[in-house]
Amino acid sequence: MRYLSLVLLALPSLAFAATELLNVSYDVSREFYKELNPAFVKYWKEKTGETVSIKQSHGGSSKQARSVVDGLPADVITMNRSPDIDILYERGKLIPRDWQARLPNESAPTASTSVFLVRKGNPKKIKDWNDLVKANVSVIIPNPKTSGNGKYSYLAAWGYVLKKGGSDAEAKAFVANLFKNVPVLDTGGRGATTTFAQREIGDVLLTFENEVTLIQEELGADKFEVVYPPLSILAENPVALVDKVVDKKKTRAVAQAYLDFHYSEQGQTIAVHHHLRPQVAAVAAKHQADFHAISLFKVEELFGSWANAEKTHFADGAIFDQIYQK
Amino acid sequence: MTAITVTQHVRYQTKVAHRRATSEPAWIRWTLIASALAFLTLFLFVPLAAVFTEALRKGWDTYLSALIDPDALSAIWLTLIAAAIALPLNLVFGVAAAWAIAKFEFRGKSVLITLIDLPFAVSPVVAGLIYVLIFGLQGWFGEWLIDNDMKVIFAIPGIVLATVFVTFPFVARELIPLMQAQGKDEEEAALVLGASGWQILWRVTLPNIKWGLLYGMILTNARAMGEFGAVSVVSGHIRGMTNTMPLHVEILYNEYQYAAAFAVASLLALLALVTLALKTFVEWQSAKNAAEFEKEANG
Image (cartoon, rainbow over all chains, first blue to last red; front, side, top):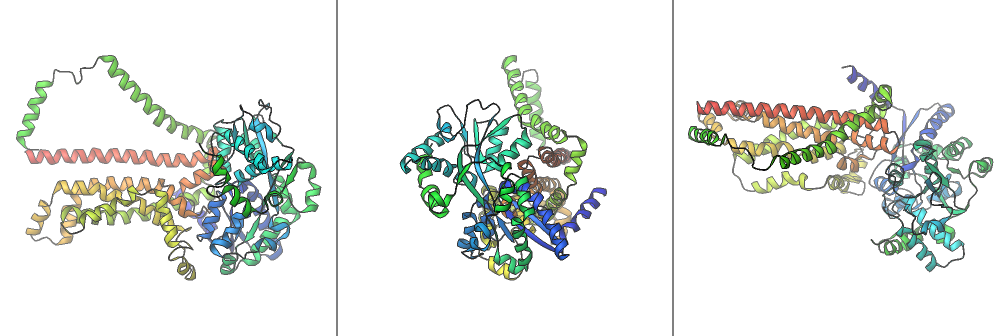
C-alpha cells in the first residue's frame, strides 16, 4: 500500500503542469538538456510567472524525426543535422520550408565536430585522418546510413582529402580504405560508444567531441585519450519549433522563448559545460580556451548542401553503398 | 485412462524395473548432465545473478532512489496500466474465442484460428508500425484524430493497443487444446438437464478450464509487462509520460546509469521469478487435479 500511494503521489506532478513543452531530440543531447531545461523553467517563471515543464524524448535522429512526422506532438525539435528537420517540411508540412532562416546562424545555436577517442597511451599512434586507413588499425564508426554522427565522420574523412588538394576519386578511395577498417557498424552514436568502450572492440572511435568528453567522464579518464585531428567537420545542431503543433497547443510564445534561450549567454554557457561549441560569437570568443583549435569546414562548403551530400553519398546505391560491401 | 491400460502400464513397469534407463556408460551420462548444467548456469543463472549484483553495486540507496525516481515511477505505473487493461481484454476474448473454436463447428473456423495466431507470426516491431500507419498523422485516421483532439499513438492508448496485440494469442492458445481434449459431453449433459447458457459457462466450462486459464493469464501478464519492440515503436519515448519499464531500462543504460538501469531491470526480473513460481504452482495444481480426475474415473 505504501508503494502504491508513493506511485499515486508521483502522478499529479506529471499531469497538471500549467504549460508543457515537448522537445524531441537526438540521442546524445540528453545531458545538455538535463541542465538547460531547468534553467529555462526558472528563467521563464521569473520573467512571466508562468510555470512551464519540458518533456524530453531522445533517440536516433532519423527515427525521432519520423515520429514527429507521424504525429509525436513535439513543440520543438532539436537535431544534429538539418536534413532531419527538413523532413518535417517535406513529409508533413509541419514547418515552413525556410525554417532555417527564422533563427540566427541558420537556426544552429551550438555545434560539435568529429574527433577520435583512442585507448590509453594511444598504442597505434593515431594522430590524423590518414592514420585511420593503416592496415592494422580497427575503427569504430556508427552507420552513416542511419546515424547523423556516422555521416559527419564519413564526410569529415572525405573533406580531409579534398582540403589537402585531393580529387573526388582520391577521396572516394581514401574513405573506402577507411571503411575497410570498420569491423562493425552500429546504428547510432551510443551503440558505437558501447561497442568501443564496453565491448572493447576497435583501436579508435570516431564520434562527436561532446560525446567523447562524456565517455571520458563517465567511463574513466584513465582508460581513454582524445585525439584532435588538425582538421575536421563542423557538425551544427539546428533547432526549430514545430508550427503545426505549437499553433494547436497554443504554445508558440513559450516554445519560441525556449529556442531563443539556446542563444542566450546562459544557454550558450550551459552548452559549453557539455562540450558543445557555442555559435554566438561573443560567447564563443569568451570560451575559446575551452576548446581545441581545430580547423573546421562546413558541409555546405565542400558538398554544396546537405541534400546534395545525402544524394551523392548516402542514398540507396550511392557512394557509401558502393564502397561498403561485405 | 481406462482401467485396462493402467494395469498394462503397471505390468510393463514391473517388467522393466530392474533395467537401467539407458545403456550408455556413466561418463557419457555425466558429461551430458554436466554440459546441460554448465549451459544453464552460463545462460540463465549467471545473467540473472548479474542483474541483481549490478543493480546493487552502488548500494541500497542508489537502488531505491533509481526506483522512486519520478520517471521510473511513471514507467512502472504505465506498465501496470497497460497490463491491467490488456489482461482482462485478453481474458474475455481468449475464453470467448476458445469456447467458440473448441465447442462449435462453423464456417471460417480455420480462418479465425489463423487470425488468433497472427500476432505470434508478426514481428512486434511490425505490429507497432501497423498502428503508426493507421493512427499516425500521415496514416488513415491521423488527421481526423488530431482534429478531434484524440491521441492514440505516442500516448497511452497506443501502448495499450500494442500490448493487447502482442499478447492476444496467449489465453486462447492455452485454452483451445484443453477445451478440445475435454470435449463437450459435460456441457451437453448440463443442457439436457435444463441449464441456461450462462449457467453452463459458470458452473461447467469455467471450473473445468480454470487452471489452464490462469496459466494463460500468467503468460499474458509476463509478456504484457516485458514487451519492448511494439511498444517502442508507438511510444514516442517521452520521459515521465510514455515510457514503459523496458523502455526506461534502455534509456538509463544509454545514459551510462548502469546501476539504475539494472535496478529497474531487477524489478522486471523479480516479476519473471514470481511468474515462474506462480506458473509452477499452477502446473502442480492442474497436475493434481488431473490425477484426482483420473482416480475418480478409475474408481
